[in-house]
Structure formats: C-alpha cells, structure tokens
Image (cartoon, rainbow, N blue to C red; front, side):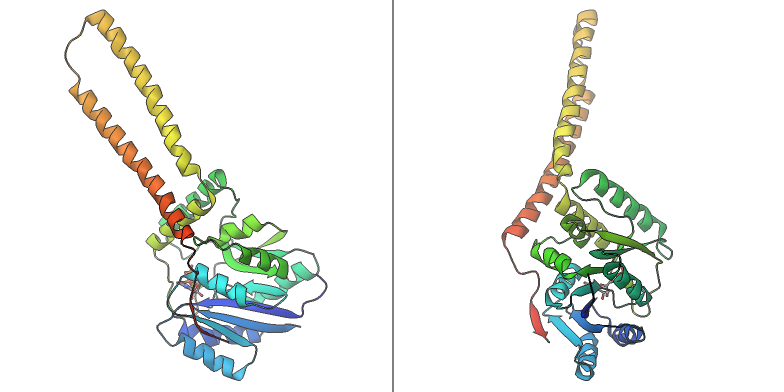
Length: 308
Ligand code: UDP
Ligand code: MG
C-alpha cells in the first residue's frame, strides 16, 4: 500500500458512557499523519453511551456512529462497524482502552511500509484473569487448532488493522453465527502479528462472564468445525469393538463353564452407558441443527435505530 488517506476506527460500545470521551482523548493525543474517521457502534446501550457519542459527533465531523435498536452482541457490532467504515485502512478497537492506541502508528507502518494486508495483536500475558478461565482458553485454542478448518492464534485480540480488500472480504461472510477470529483466518491474506500486553480497563466493567465465554467458544467450534459430528462414528466404533470382545469372552466362558444365569449388572451397565452415549451424541446433532435453523432464517444480524 502506498499511502493512507483515511483510517477508520471501528469501536463497539455497550454501556460504556465513561469510556467514550477517554477513548477519543487518547486517540487524538496520538501524532497521526493522516485523517481519521471514528465509527462508534452503540450496541443497544441502556446508559448514556449514545448521548456521549452524539455529543462528540456534534463537535467533530469525523465522528460517525451506528446505533442498534437493542443489544445484538459484539460480533454484530463489529460487523456493522466494518460495513459502515469508509477508510482505506480500518482498525477495530475496544473502547475501554485495553487495546492500547500507542500501537496504531506501528500497525500502520507494517501495512504501508512492509506490505502486510492486516496487522493483528496477541496478548503476551493473561494477568488479571482467573486461572480457570486461562486454562479453558488455552484448551479451546488447542482443540480448535486440532479439529477445525482454521488455525487460531492463542491470545489473539479483537484489535486488528486491515486494508480495504480484507474488510471487503470479511464483510462478504454474512453467517448468522459469526466468530470473527475464525473469519479473519478464513479470508486469508498476509497478517503480521504483534505482541501487546493485557492492559486494565480505564472505566466500567467487563461484559463477559465465564459462561458467556464458554457459549462463545462452543459457537466458535460450531462455526468452523464438524469434528464433534464425527465423534458419533468414533464412539460407535469403539462400542462395537468392545461388544465383540465381550461376546468372545462370553462364548469362551460358556464353552468352559456351561451357562449359568447371571449378568444383570452387565446388562444394566451396557444399557445405561449406551443410553448416555446416545443422548450425548443427539445433543451434538441438536447443537448443529440449531445452528442450521438459525442460519436458514437469514435474519439481519443487527437492526439500526439511527446512524450518521
Ligand atoms: N461490547 C459490545 N457488545 C456487547 C459486549 C461488549 O459492543 O454485547 C463491546 C464493549 O463495549 C467493549 C468491547 O466490546 O468495547 C469489549 O468488551 P469487554 O471490555 O466487556 O470485554 P473484555 O475486554 O472483558 O473481554
Ligand atoms: Mg475490555
């Protein structure tokens, strides 16, 4: 890329009133040599967030916004931001300043001078995060990388800069179950990874609980892997193998000792184990089915209340 005319900064916000002005101040303090456009996405906030954004927009024509009719989630907010951004470079950032703005010049340089199509960040540490959560996060990345269509980078953040052609590719994927980390990998292009530390939030609270993250990882798996479906065949094969061995054992026992009537514990165990396995596998099928039924409705991924 030769030069940057306009950098769009896409910022999803959900109940982040105290952060909006702090965020703008932090970006404006940077010595950037090109025009910047802010695309705030108000994800159905119930606090003063939209009012703060509008106040900022009133004093600065470069501040634009999209406001949702309700909370549609961060993935939808990111999509809306990317769709509304007009810059030849686009960066997505959290409004809580956990994505440090000081990295922006370095990211731009990687694209303009080194010829990358996107620059992504990964955190080097998970300080401040509960140990159990980190453990599950690592397991999730290991599982995804082994069994899914995409290779994810452990610790990758939603702080990413892209050229126009990457944004256009990302926006073309209109699936209802959006898992952006997977989508970025899926579209390809040359990506530079830079390391960033885990900064503390400037104000407000995190919107993610352990269980919402767990749900998010299950949806991520669903979006990019069919491996759980194959699990049914594997489990079935194991059961068959076990049954054949057991049949041989019973036969030999019958030949040697005759046929004593015994074995209701064995039957109970077999019935319960198989019943449990079947329910488990039906559960996996159901999860995929739910995914399909959601996709097939083709509902819009967000509804805009107002925008500028
Ligand atoms: N966010 C959003 N919609 C939601 C939840 C979060 O737009 O339903 C935004 C939020 O305002 C913030 C970013 O996504 O700018 C990251 O959220 P948060 O800081 O709560 O996540 P964490 O940093 O704890 O992972
Ligand atoms: Mg945060």
